[in-house]
Amino acid sequence: MKVEKDVEIPMRDGAMLRADVLRPARAGRVPAIMNLGIYQKDKVWIPPDDLEEKANAHLVWEAANPQWWIPRGYALVRVDGRGSGKSPGRTNPWSPEEALDFYDAIEWVARQPWCNGAVGLSGISYYAMTQWLVANLRPPSLKAMIPWEGAADLYRDFAFHGGIFSFGFSVNWYHNQMANHLLGRPQQAATDAFAGDWLWDYMRHSLDGDWYYGRQARWEDIRVPFLSAGNWSGMGLHLRGNSEAFVRSPLRTKKLRLHAGTHIHPYHSDEGRRDQLRWFDYWLKGENNGVLREPPVKLEIRHGGGRSVWRTERGWPLPRTRWTKYFLAANGTLAPRRPRRSQSVDYPAAAMTRMGKATGTFSASTDAGAAQSGASFFTAPFEHAMEITGPLSLTLWVSSSTRDMDLFVTLRNIDPDGKDVLETGQQGQLVPVAKGWLRASHRAEDPNLSTPWRPYHLHRERRWLTKGEIVRLRVEIWPTSIVFAPGHRLRLDVQPRDGLGAAPYTHYNGDYNSGTNMLHLGGRFDSHLLLPMIPD
Image (cartoon, rainbow, N blue to C red; front, side, top):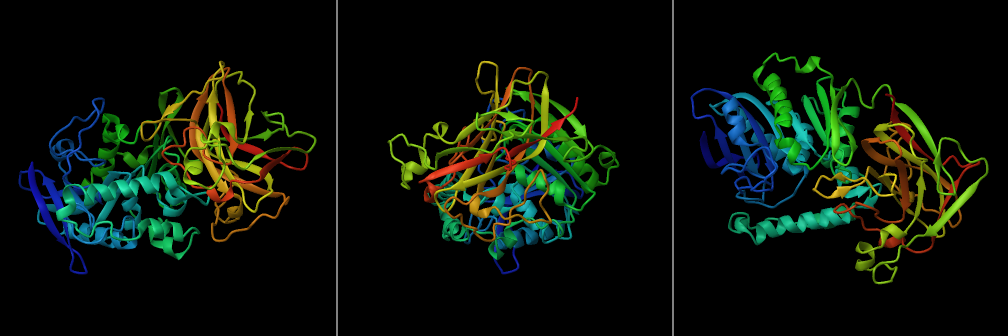
């Protein structure tokens, strides 16, 4: 292995970004696999003991392992984004300016004498999100990419879930990275790091619009073949972007892979690396390995409590899906038949906090007793194993005594003893089956992009409620896959704030936490959960 540290890459405006280049020591031209971001290209990562790839001097967070890839004939190029690590400047994560820098870095690498002119992109999370944004710009030398668990829409996937600000993750992530740079090792190299009003910008732009244009994947502009790898447990950050990419991209040269567990273990697993290697071997080396003749969708079907099996499919959503409605009833049931008479369920818009208060204070927004809020609905115990795999939606007729209403939706797997069967989350936490969110004033949909199973909300205006006004809305629930064992039940929670397993993707909703919310069910109100049931 030949290692070149702090290589300077010129940008179009005269700035210099610094990169590490790790490549085979032997002579010859090889393809390059790149990533660009703010996690410090040479900050060694010590992985957990159960990771299939083991610690070494060149392993860094959320990026490919040189000791595995370089013997297989690839160079790895890791670039510190502007204003991070050893690249001077002002930090602006996931911005149009960062995408332009990435474009320039890709084209510079492709011209190097050791490169065969073909560049691929790989990496988790941040390193996946930047892939979508630079792909919008169509750098000529970019031949393939693997956005592994990468949000593709900085409004819908990252900052505002259903129009509700994802306060917990965005604030903590930004301040943690700021501390890593201004108080950690890079403080002498990137002296202007995190000098902008990044969080202010997101809160100021609380509706979708022009500011987000360069911060969203534009599927009609992206022409590079991609393997989009998502995580069922990534609800709250990455899952939606990976599945949306496969559905909306017009490309035929695309694949979708949805796995389970943390966001680091599948990427570094032998099975996961083999999928990545075959994709890059085909596109960057020209090996005719048949990867495009195989089914385009690969799914890890969860069977509860960490058990799962892999399965390939021909499309997404699955063509054989039986879209099944389960109607909500005031007695707390979910059933295939709509109640004959109109009913209603009301609950306080505020949940009591541990301090016994329900106000817009910081503690009320973060310490609410979520388990005691809202309304819950249960199916009857399933007589046979029941699989749901795909996107979901919840149709509700609602009203409120205040001018807006926040809806936090959680799907749970309940065993015969009444206990939750939880899964390993993206961050290693325990999570339920699926989640969705919507602020009632954001209920307007794009009729061209919405489907019965995935409403696409515009988020361009606010349609305030009037007291007692009953409106129909549809909540997008991020995709999931779970097989309910016989005797298990599905539980649906509809709450005014974050429910079970929300952390770290918690939300700020202090503005609408007073008054009474009401759900209207049965009769002329077709409030129902649409499930993607898969036949045996």
